[in-house]
Amino acid sequence: MATTLSRCFTLALFMVILMASISSSLANMANMNVVDKCWGGNPLWRSQRQQLAKCSVGFAGKMINNIGKDVVKYKVTDPSDDPLSPKSGTLRYGTTMIKGKVWITFKNSMTITLQRPLLLSSFTAIDGRGVDVHITGAGCLLVYQVTGIIIHGLRIHHCKAQPPSTLMGPNAKVIPLGQMDGDAIRLVTARKVWIDHNTLYECQDGLLDVTRGSTNVTVSNNWFRNQDKVMLLGHDDGHLRDRNMMVTVIFNHFGPNCNQRMPRVRHGYAHVANNFYQGWEQYAIGGSMSPSIKSEANFFVAPNDVGNKEVTWRKGEKGLWKFYSVGDVLKNGASFNKQTGVDGAKPNYSQEQNFKVVNAMFVKELTSESGVLQCSRGLIC
Image 1: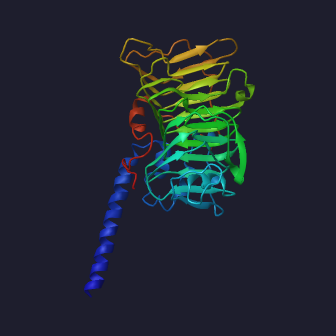
Image 2 (image 1 turned 45 degrees about the horizontal axis):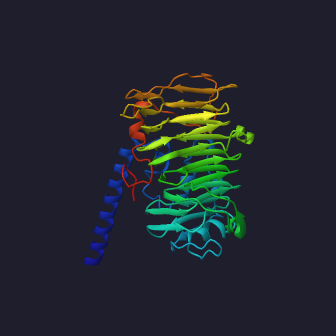
Image 3 (image 1 turned 135 degrees about the horizontal axis):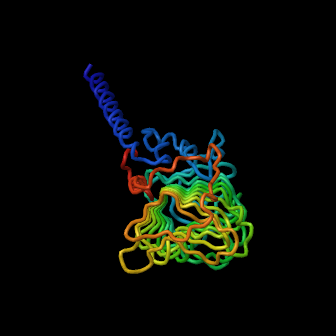
């Protein structure tokens, strides 16, 4: 009888705690952005991780091709790295040796020091929620000629340049690789990529490059800090394939100590909305080769020192530039001058890509949990 009563009490206590957690989550969901609201209030998210794939918005669209009964659930247990013969249990084994869809999680917190850049196979999701995963070393992440990529919940930092090398690539094939400049994440001819809730900082070159025909990319809820060149969209002025590039940059926190390229856009299209800019040195958003950039409802705080208060930078203005501001908040003397092509750079999202851009006055709240999540504001860890 006593045992039965004890079990009943334990069950009742569990239900009370669960209901309290759900109630707290629902109360805090009002302060979440549309991406986090989709999954962050679910107390069962650990057992329903693939729900995340239905939460992306912007040009990446929903990542439903990354989920299903045929997904391999792979858990990283070993932080070591062998670029040519990846061991089972390591991150590189999960991103290169498993055929088909793979959803990668981590057994516990760890630091992975890459010996060479890490390539990802198509339909790979790296999910760092619930633990603290640091990735550093040579490279770091290279998304090369693949589709269907989710990168979520990682701290990627102190990535170094890497000379030409040979390493294990997608579909368990050893491939040669050229010079790598030392970016945290680099996309090359990649499609349908979602980069969400990562913290990126202090890399040798940049934090994120989207280049050489990559498109349908959403960059959301990330924290970019302590970096000169932050985000490059478009390989170089002569790479015309980047005219088809479409990138959504939303709910990110830029700063402190970021200099430029938040983002810098060549040729293609960028919808930059609901981001928080904590100062800059040269500029915040810039471009060349007649890109189309819609800056919408961002919160720009210019640097305190006497310097460049102007948000934008333009290299050459021949051609039909479309670069303008809608509903941005400009603080501490920030300015957004010389707007061109006003109303001519609408994203024209499909139904699954579309989302509501909120008033810029709410951006600081909506981006307060940018970067790797810390199990707060209703997220039940």
